[in-house]
Length: 186
Image (cartoon, rainbow, N blue to C red; front, side):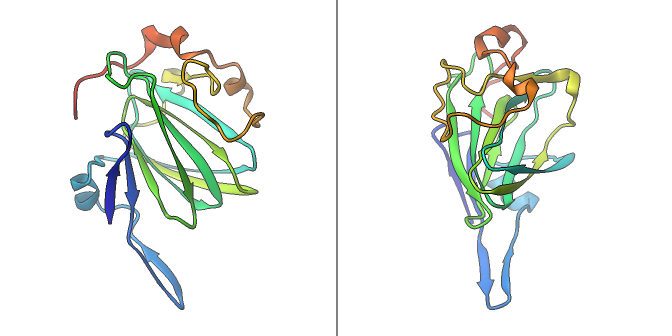
């Protein structure tokens, strides 16, 4: 089991131990004491599961007043997952990290509260599951343009399938007064 800080150290790549044999595999996907020691802290209050087809881009999404931390993974297919620091005053404000997550590599990504999140599907279909540290609140949701030039995210797709709400999402600079505040190192 490895917990690897990314270019933004608060975002952690989790490399779980996968036990394989002729029957299949076994992997722990959450164990509070181990994950907490590795920098992934709950408590988690909500689990979500989505299925999307090739080229679908979901995001970038965040919550303002009740930011959610998310522990994300893929159980079928492959995605390119992105976390963007949108905490006003953060030393890494506006920077992002990205990881390829798949059912084959078993990687997880810890996205702390105050980060926007999005992903694009690279396989024919992908199923994505994640744990959240706070409840989803539609009235508190922030959507940020996936292709905001200020973020310079090198998405591996030029013309993704988007929801109408994601298609109309504003740039990060337009949202700045509503963004969560950086409260210092965790």
